[in-house]
Length: 212
Image 1 (cartoon, rainbow, N blue to C red):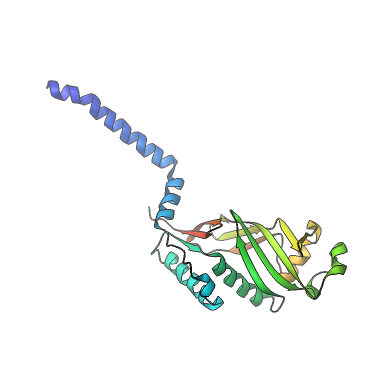
Image 2: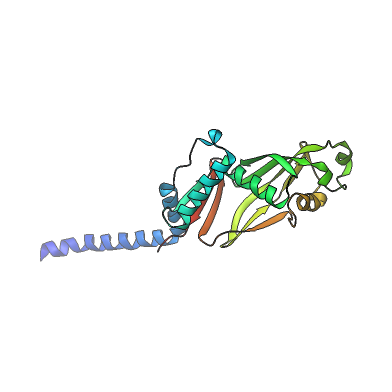
C-alpha cells in the first residue's frame, strides 16, 4: 500500500507529460507534417546536365505520379526539370516566341529567362523599346506558392529586358504576349492531391496528401 501511494505522484506526472506532449503535437501538427514530408521525400536526382529535355520532363512526371499515387509524401522537382516543363508549356501556348529558356529557383521565388522575339512584344516599352534587337533576353521573376488546394499563383514582381527593369505599367502587355491571357498574378490549376509547394534553391518541393 505504501509503495502504491509513493508511486501515485509519478503516475500523475507521467499522465501530465503525455497530455502535454499530445497538446504540443496538436498545435504544431502542420510543422510536424512538413518535417515528416522532408524526411520521407524522394532524393532529387543529380544527373540533370546529361539528360535531354524530354528525359527531364518524363522524370519529373514519373515523380509526380508517385506523389499522386501516394507512394511518397513529397517530391522535389529540380531546376532543370522545371526548366524543361516550362519551356514546353511556353512553346505550346506561344509557339516560337522564345528560345534558350532558363529557370532559376530561389527561396520562395522563381525566375524564368529566355531570348524573346521582340517583334511580338508591345511597342509601349518606353525608351528601351527603340534599342531592342530582333531577339532579347527577358527575365520574369516573383514568388510562387499554393494559395489554396487546386490553385497556385506566381506573383510577378520584376520584368527585365537586357537587364533593365520595365515599369510595372507595361508588365501586363508583355506577359500577355508571352503567354496569352497572363497577368502580373499568374494563376494556374494544381492537382487536388498536391497540398503544398515550397520553392527552394535545391528544387521545388511538392507535398501530397497525408492520411490521418
